[in-house]
Image (cartoon, rainbow, N blue to C red; front, side, top):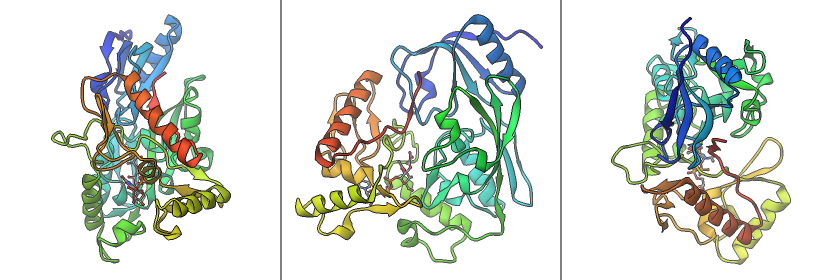
Length: 348
Ligand code: EPU
């Protein structure tokens, strides 16, 4: 195999949806597994750290860039089987997988339409939206072990999936997600579980109808990347929805009602988790902390369609974005006594 020759000083901002941050000292695009392994060998010989990037839609690049080798994962084979098995390389654009599934009447991904980024990112943060999570339909994940440079298949039980969480997210130095095998339901019914969706489609709606309804909902929240949308430079939800103990949920509900931020307890959005905890809506808490949709501070702002998306209006720096995010976090902490955790990954 030809020797790997990484490019030098490659700007990373254009590879991210936030369009922020500095260059990679070294850069390689790995379109196949051999190149991926060669990239890790090269970095080890050259004494360079390695960072991975995929679709760049959930990524914050520091202003100083990355002082090491950035590997852009481009593994792009995809296959759909009539029995509902779908195998997709980590670099396959996610929407292509959703589209292929819906047009072949394979149920299980129809609510996960309109999400930017690549397939490899979906198990890492257990992507979920409108009542579905990828973990529900993942059969296995093929990973490269960064220490041994061997490929292995991991079952869902070995991925330790949680709300926007997995083993791969917690141990980024350990694994590279290379491919995902999904088991979908041929001819199966669409998932119509999410409240907003139930209000929009009939109970027997087709996969295609549900997909269109989700796309409409996402567009209305500027959560579909559209070149003409002034809110387009974002990383989707900037904070996780906080998962709190029942006592904290009750305290926050009581406070919100007594302060007049909510007309009654039922109107405070909260969802029970299987653990007995409660998931609160970060967007709601942000707004009740006095931060309004459309708020603007220099080059950054809160999306005017959804309080959870921070938007880069152009010409800003990552340091400014992180400061802006910290201001929002401290407003929410001051008011509600809970910390919002950042959702997009910082490339360190
Ligand atoms: N809300 C507000 N203000 C807003 C927006 C929403 O108060 O500006 C309230 C809504 O009224 C609702 C609640 O917050 O009661 C939840 O809002 P929404 O249904 O829009 O969902 P979310 O919890 O804010 C999560 C995911 C999204 C996903 C949607 C739909 C996280 C961090 N975000 O958002 O995922 O699309 O549910 O399932 O879990 C992403 O991760 O980047 C992302 C967009």
